[in-house]
Amino acid sequence: MDQLESPLLDLQNISCTLEQGQSLFHDVNLTLNEGDILVLQGRSGSGKSTLLKCIAHLVLHSGRTLYRGKTPQEQGIPHYRTRVMYVPQRPSLLPGTPTNFIHSILSLGTHRALARNNAEAEVIRRSSELAQGWGLDPNLWQREWSNLSGGEAQRMLLVIALSLNAAEILLLDEPTSALDPETSRLVEKALTDEIASRGTLKALVWITHSAEQGKRVGTRFIQLAASGCCEEASLV
Image (cartoon, rainbow, N blue to C red; front, side, top):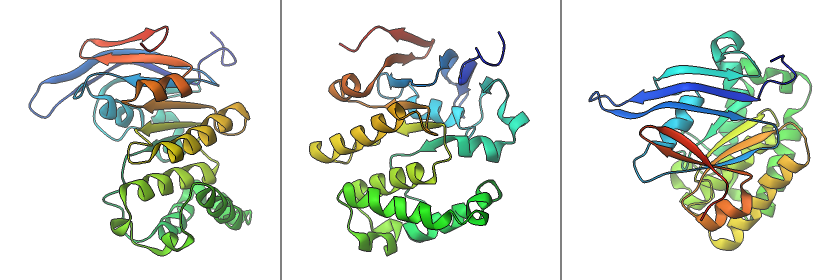
């Protein structure tokens, strides 16, 4: 298969073992193509969040991950993580404020081109505009992460991830779990519209416990189990 035909992301025999030596899941094989919104489901404790962290190379695991035909090591893991970005449920360990976080990201080598190209102002402008549309008070940009509510922190993380305009794949760990239904729909629409626009963001892997949300946003549906994963035609 040549590079033009290869998937955006290719997971080959991904396995993860807990510290106690117990296998969480093994031999996960799946591909992700441009335009996919892959809804990842499975019982509680099946390792859905851990699988996202494996894809992002944030936890130890075995198997092979290819992004545009190359391993993260071949691309450089910091660069890979800007293109395949993990968005946790809550940034509980982040220091400082959301504004501090944007500045710290833009100071990293993988994002310095934004500053050199005078794009930092555009990132901040886009972040502010999107945050306002999602009902976030402008004062929250200067508030410590630890003082944000769960819903505020979730929206801030997503706003920043989208506004950086660097990721081709977002790995979303229950991105609306702390949001009310109306705000959840706003977030869903922004993410699905971004995929439909055929801009920088090409695909999503989305964990949700809501079958209704999965049906609204998903184009593909994966069930994760200890023995691997299987694709389903739809959600029941």
